[in-house]
Amino acid sequence: MQNWIPSLKRPPTVAVIRLSGVIATGGRGQLNDAGLASAIERAFRKGKPKAVALVINSPGGSPVQSSLIAARIRRLSAEKDIPVTAFVEDVAASGGYWLATAADEIIVDESSVVGSIGVKQTPTSILVLMEKIGVDRRVYTAGKSKSQLDPFRAENPEDVERLKGLLDDIHTSFKTHVETRRAGKLPEGEDLFTGEIWLGRKAIEKGLVDSIGHLIPTMKDRYGDKVRFRVFGPRRGLLSRFGVRLMSDAIENLEERAEFARFGL
Image 1 (spheres, rainbow, N blue to C red):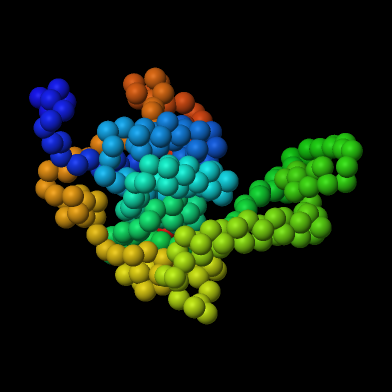
Image 2: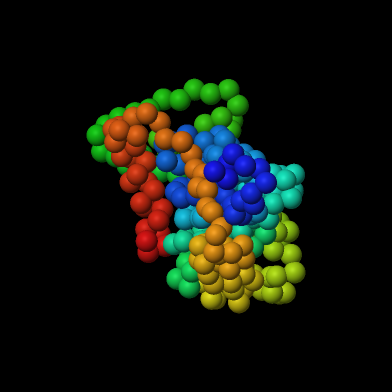
């Protein structure tokens, strides 16, 4: 009835965006800007929400996708003048923490894992296997750096140094983002950007998060017991809706479990 009678006062609404999984371009179930764009836009625009809540459970992933998602959230928050609160479940590490800092406030569970503000690259070499089975790979390039970090060739020290430089640049961007978003909250003279992780209360001490709490009781305390929650997330494809899994999905699931396992989850 409320939807048909404008004069009746509707209970406040909180839009909830679930950000769960590895951050990466492409695969089903992975977090990326293209896959989340519609959900994020609808969360800020539909029904004039009092606030947007990010429910985060991510071990990280692509720094570019992390930046794109966070930037979209910040842009819409400023455009619509809607506050954003992040609620961390099991983990908000690396890119997952980048997403959390898109919020104006970060709330965690006492056992939530937070941090890992660093950058890593894990190239794989199968050179030894090739030698054992007698396979010889031949590569022809124009440009001396065109075939750098080739997993089929012996490691080149120059390639490693070049990669480390790229990782340092990304790490600097990550640090700058955190320092900007958490300005005035981080302790002076303490290096929080080593890749170390902390649990809930210790993360509060380090200024990386703000308080202990959970979504529903926190929002009811702020907006009343009648507050409504509208959940938004990436739309699943037709095959996923019917439980059909392809081999690529199985591989991505294994990779995701490996990422979560790094934090004991």
